[in-house]
Image (cartoon, rainbow, N blue to C red; front, side, top):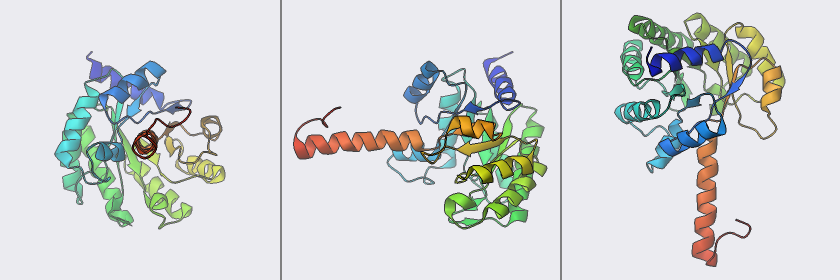
Length: 254
């Protein structure tokens, strides 16, 4: 059994019980640190990758993302979940083809978003896109986990009820895990977990008031940080760089 097959099996097993945390590194150095810190799996971050290239989130091309995913997957024995954005296509057949290419990079899982710019796809088309991704994985014969993401709460243009409706549809269309970045209230999280059960739920650790133990107690299977580590790293870089150029020394206490 090769290492990619083993990683995919371990990744799926992590979703069967308990709660685990994904680190979201954007380069190999970050992967190495996550390994040393004891993370059981990692996920890419579209924002972190884009910022490292001097671009904004959403400005990295499909082929650049595929090369990045291959580099991450072949640098570690840990399972890698791909932030595959919107699948780099609007129509289901395009999503399916790009998912096929993503599987070839060695990832253990991948997510498909339902946003188009600052708007959401109509729920019917969004669901067909998830179904197409599911079919592409099934045709590949590879044990890759599919995550259905609904972006409305993050964009601020929908309600929790509408988001839950979408994630129920994505689970029915074949998503192995569902994810609504931007959900914060523990009552909403419990309601989502109950609504999509037994499909595992991923929650983004987006608010300092949120805690992994509390999310685990609410039934969340996995927790991710998205671009949070990258944002923190760039903030520290800017603080140090500003102190050196403006004050002539390192930040006090660093």
